[in-house]
Image (tube, rainbow, N blue to C red; front, top):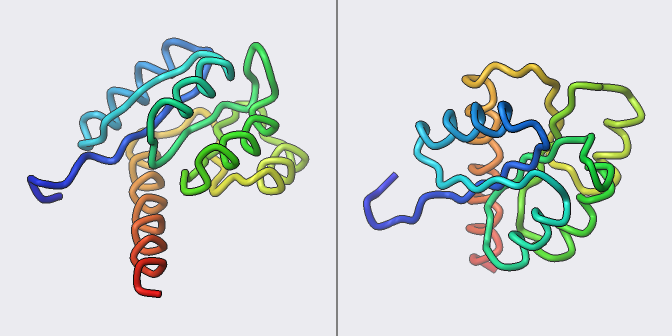
Length: 136
């Protein structure tokens, strides 16, 4: 990353404070600017007020099912990359996530090294997409 480029911004949405802290620490150590939210309302407010390159969204939230939140986030910020995190993986969750705009699906517990690699891969895809769109 060059000095004059801004750090990619990531929003982590999970109601478990320990998970928020561990993911936040891992991503900040990898050079990302990180923000957190503990419920869907807070995440929506933050994503309307700020640009995020990527959001990590827990499936089970206190105020809404995470897969249902994806559509609203994509409508607000179509360029955002969305990755679902779940401790309760199921085929239905995966299908719902993809149908509602998820770009990825990860199961908890997740190794932080793997998470950072997945984030890097999705941010690279986003960068390539923007470059392609600018060439037209």
